[in-house]
Length: 122
Image (cartoon, rainbow, N blue to C red; front, side):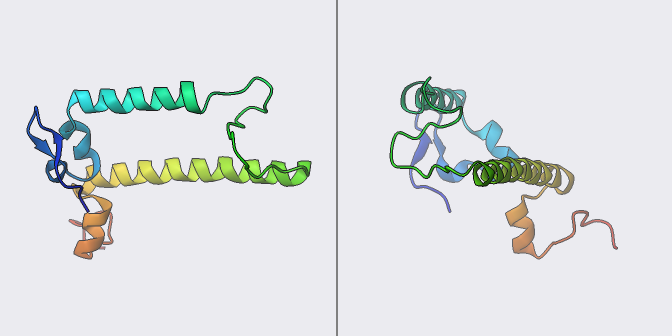
């Protein structure tokens, strides 16, 4: 799925021209990365700013679920940390897989290639 239109009219780069996976890092113009960086900074400094009176990480300014039970809260926080670590390991695995095989994970699945080493018969 690609968005219609141009990613950068100045550099004549369409959204369809940006490859999936690690190739996107070099395809997006520097001005695009600067916009992403500045937008994230704006979100962090303006909209999701840490309130000194709130618990660390409690950034919600609206009706959000908060846990009164300390044991339940600790379990939920630990689950969030573990899920974050799992997500980091998964994305690193996908990056390594792309560098080893030269194909993105989606391209490998579409091709029916479920082996991380397609050139080796197992």
